[in-house]
Image (cartoon, rainbow, N blue to C red):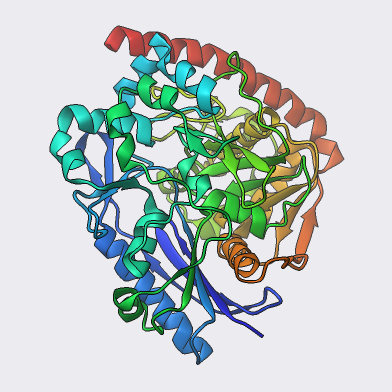
Length: 488
């Protein structure tokens, strides 16, 4: 029975898991990634360090299994800007999707209609850490970096190029912000709107579904695996998690409680409504005629980690803290918008900021933690409502390690959630794509999961809480936009 190693190159951790043909995990390994947090909201990564991390975890997993795998499948973080030369060497540090250097530019584009114009061509919104504003920013401030580059790509294709010597960009990665998802071609109107039409040659065309690469000599040396071993690159982590968590039918969705609070719903149509709020994107999937309507909010588990640090607790304390505070957090309310780059879904607002209010001397640290978790739940519901969820919902990501938080999410959403028993659903999803690429007609076996049901006795409380959240958010957005205009 064939073994494939799935590698998930996350923002903070790179993970590798060896799966057998039934989807069972045989061995796993992980390595922390290094992020350079620089002044001005700049967040960068070293491609060489990322590639070395991939080599470390693949070697460890292959050694644990005791034999080389039959293939390697890559997924990982999306967006950001990973500039390389023709040999795959970085011409500057990779700019993370978390980067905020182009926040003022995005704010200006929101006001002058640039983002709306691009959205009409692609159905993709923009935020500071995506290709449109980053390419424009570099064109003004670092044109030599663009002049030296041969490829303006993403994390997964950057690693794949170092392992195989080929540039292979999955259509899911290419989506934001220039791709017309209906044709899988770049939209000249979107490039022109962002003022980077002359840099279109840096964008590699999306690879055809089912493309299989092979390790070259350099890649084989990095991974300690045979030269020519099949490699599949993509889709990136959001659609890979949807596939790995069992999203199969139109209307089904997945919520990822990770660094990104990512909501996705499977659809069989793309609606490029020019009057819609320009946020989210329509992600291409490996299946023709199927897309994921994605609303990836900026802050997920990072907001929880922030409040835990604030009250002197750790993730090991989450279940106990949520148990000690009742639904509604004794009147404490929060906004979870803590990213320096603001928010990107289900609305784009670079000046969005977090909030924790309703505090009193009677407030306990458990109430602050529950308030933030509830706010993340409300943000997730807002995203899922906007994405058009109508079927079942899977819940995955690091946040699901907390049983109480998973229950809270089901309560806030007012619907059952399926929690896959395999934690590394991104790696499992890209391994399923690799098997289908190597053996056309392959169908992934149904995954194992547990169902968390919402509690009827808190339904009314959370319905009222969600209405209040949406009303307060509408007021806050007006204030954020006015403040941004006054500063600009």
